[in-house]
Image 1 (cartoon, helix red, strand yellow):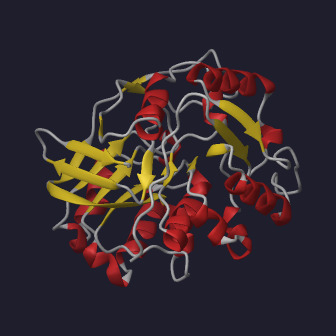
Image 2 (image 1 turned 135 degrees about the vertical axis):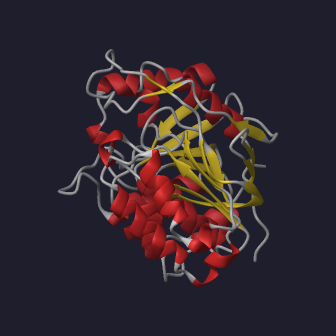
Length: 329
């Protein structure tokens, strides 16, 4: 167990590099880019873009060589203090064998993204002990309306040096906002679902469940001992897919040393209900002894919090009152 490395936090005037380790910037509308660019300007952060971010191939991505070059450049460039992914996708795990992990280890800086980027987040932590962040992509910042919660937690996690608490958002949305920026249907947030009560503290691992599972049995899979797993999945994950994917994690030899589970909000198309999710959790005897909470604001609906992969979560779960505290420094 190497000593965990926390990257320095971002401050006004810092340069943030946007790279595309998964899908290409070519698919992001000019409207979304303008909104995103303005948001970074307002935070006092200077944006720069990897050389190959606009390239696009048959997989709406770019060559391994192009993506590796941009990743290495971003970590090697002394002026760059934070790295943000363009968007998720399907293929950043293609990069692992080509990454010079020493470049990342020797140039610790903030790296943030979610969804497919889960593979990179957890691989970086496993190979280098550097904490990276599950949080909004560059493209996420292109969301015009109802962005306050997401922006607030991005700053709390990446621009401040104190632990912070996650609180439920007042409302959420599952609309494809990039298709119609002005027409967002807000759904009132009924708060978290406390499934198994209890208290836990541990290292945060995980994020997108089916992507996390791609690491199983490889040198890139983190040890689960002493962890609190944050798990979510997107609209393609029906209740039965989530069940089998979660079961797969539970079968891992070191799962018995997991301290707790925090589950992100499901998208409507997944057709997951509180009843189905509770049933899934309650039928797994390995989960009986650990706290489990769900409907937390992270994953593929909006808004979303930012949290450190390799940082610490302290959770206290009860039907009356639950608390989640994150330490990312």
